[in-house]
Length: 190
Image 1 (cartoon, helix red, strand yellow):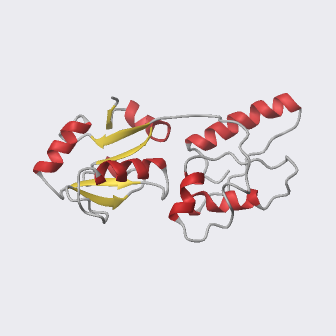
Image 2 (cartoon, rainbow, N blue to C red; image 1 turned 90 degrees about the vertical axis):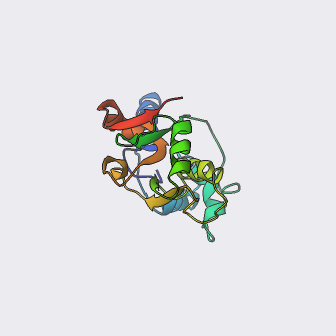
């Protein structure tokens, strides 16, 4: 598992390991080797003997990393063979409750009225949330750096939008569900 415990890929891996273990009558272990956007754990699997006892359960960074990192220690296409698609999930825009916008169109209008004052966070390097956030922001700016004109980039931790400084980010619901259910964060669900 090239990601830390608790994320959506880890949850799916643990559920899959439990069900697979029941089916084959052997214990299946999830070994989290997080770091470098998934490169560390993925490299361990790429170098493991091809005997069927080591399986990689991964996500978007697996296909994105070769375009983000200069020296990926494995070949995504040659060193791995896809077996099954285990999950799909959608990302959501999550915002600080103090942000006056309640939808994406309102957020864009607010940012256009107040350029450079609305901070956004972007998570794990190479994550789908980072890519979606950056792609969306590039749509509204001619800038090619991380300041995207009407928005201001700030690397974030999970609690980024819980303080008044952080305004929004795009991520998956699983990681932030408790904040959303407690209504300490706003979500545009459209």
